[in-house]
Image 1 (cartoon, each protein chain N blue to C red):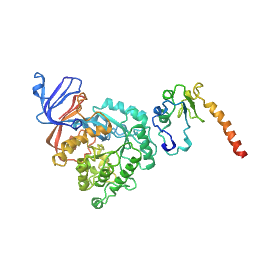
Image 2: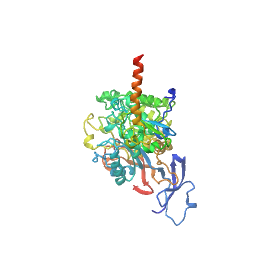
Image 3: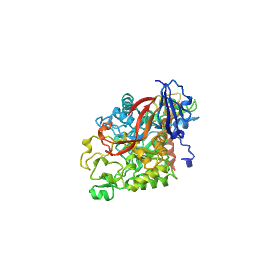
Image 4: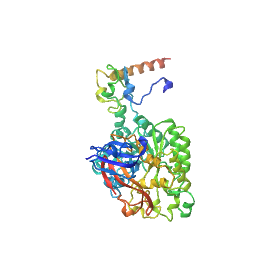
Length: 109
Length: 428
């Protein structure tokens, strides 16, 4: 991770300190055949984005997620739908446009 | 509670480096008010009742890191009440209980039950372990974080071993992130398959299939290799062979971990099995005399950190069977200290080393403030006549199960009184 220039944290609160944007990623349950995790509820407790963990980021931090979301696993449902903090819907909508644009560029070459 | 004064005791408290003749005061709230040579008749109030111990020993209450209790599921073998009575008679005031119950201690709701039972029925301090994997099946991890928050002190599959190295490395990763203590019973199942006693001349003579020492060594080597990459709190529950001691000696230079040994493996060897004595069917098995001596030396050299009783109560019906059918394990919490003192009386170990591996070392590994006589701490302690001779008789044992491995053994040294939180809960 260090070689990629990434600072990795196992304590989410420390990792979130002073962040402008918090991007959650989907827990890929379908690829989790052999016990990476003990349970979803424990994952949520330690690594799910919740209001109390978000307080450690900047006060105007934006929440992102490429979707589809597992509510109650990697992200709290209230935060996901919070129109003041979450730009997830816009991200997903614009993501389609970006993919369309990419496809067009590559296909025309 | 009235203040209690003791004088003329040999006080050994390795945590505070105390090894001197002196006294001890327990205050009204059951805490230690003063300890050491400063406490003597010259500075105690004359009108108070002062107990002269006449050279008897005061040790911190023992911390036993490997105890099986039958609750829930096997209450007929041992429950919290009988366990604590047995423990108190042996000077043990804190125990770490194994999760091999029915149901297994592997989820948050059962921990609530366990803590309630421990609190209501037990007179000693209970520190429960949860299993590493769900239902001790060795496949899926339990919720370390949530369980630890509920008061689980460490994680172990008890009598079982994590065989899958991939799972073990994930367990270590989780344990590292969450600061959990992992305790492994080291045994490779393929190498130990159907085994009952140590590989060697005795197994051949008795015609019993055996557990070679490499079954233990290979697992320790594997785990310690993984540990080099993922540094978590890791403890080997029990060592049993000379080779294992050599391995940990070498590995301790590279990576940090701790290890324990059962009092059975320190005091007995495979010859004691004699003619199929099933009460000596143990896990890990008793090995050669050379192995026993190496284990004692390991303690002396500080390579092995703790002595455990590996107290595993089994009813006689489970024990008095043919060797292959008989249950594994021996009851031992009551005789842990007396049997350990044998190593002092025969000049194998210093008294301080023994007490250290029964009190302050386990407490340090578990990160609990027990096993010491620090001022202001709960007065958990035992008064011991280390020379008093006695003979182990199973009908005199307090534990619900009488499967002692040392029936009729002559021992020297007996616990006279045991105190928990300043209350005298056992008196000989």
